[in-house]
Amino acid sequence: MNVYSLFRYAVIPCVLAASASAWAAGPQRPQIPGFLDARTGQFTAQAAVSPQADVDPLAVGTYGGLLALRINITNKTSIPTAWVIYCTQYVTVVDPAGTVITNQKTVKATRTGSTAACVPNINYSWVINNTNAIVTTQYMVFTQGDSTVLTDVSVNGNLPNIAVPANGQTTSRTVAVTL
Image (tube, rainbow, N blue to C red; front, side):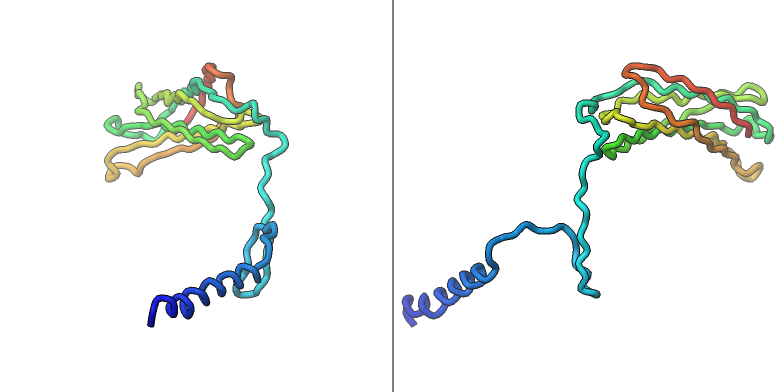
């Protein structure tokens, strides 16, 4: 078989088949986003995600400051003095564009007799859309020690939500906890 025969019987039919396939498909039409359920054969269209109307694109920026939390602890469960008491502050900011940022800090409490105190302050710097952004704060106080003496003790709580503080501002809050 010579080169011309190979071209005539192998290459030309492949090119014609590809051309026919492209011609049969027709012009490209806009597509509807969604998915086809292979089991039922039903097409389900997906709604296009559009930005919220109340989001101001000019409000995107870097917001930073200090979220100071003082936790005053009263020990009523006879936690041994050798045990360590820890405090954690969890801060989450959610903006209307869907950005979610979480910061946390854990510190060791300072004990004095049957009381203790800790200050798990968080320095933050968030790149967010500040239009109606919400800051949530949770805290946890827990012990760590010899579990053969006493079961570990912990307390969790939430503080009321706040708006994003002004840039550079210190926001101070205090909570009292009993263990």
